[in-house]
Length: 37
Figure 1 (cartoon, rainbow, N blue to C red):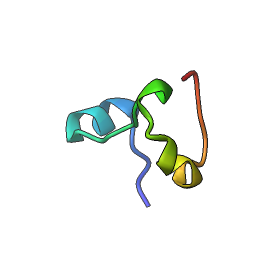
Figure 2: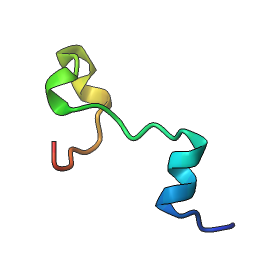
Figure 3: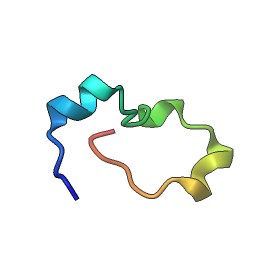
Figure 4: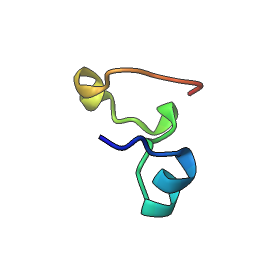
């Protein structure tokens, strides 16, 4: 499996998530981690 760089991921349009204040509270059980949110 090839390792991808951050630049390659961004060029492909990978979605990294939303700010924590934009999360719908009903979706909390599906959220696995929060980083620098």
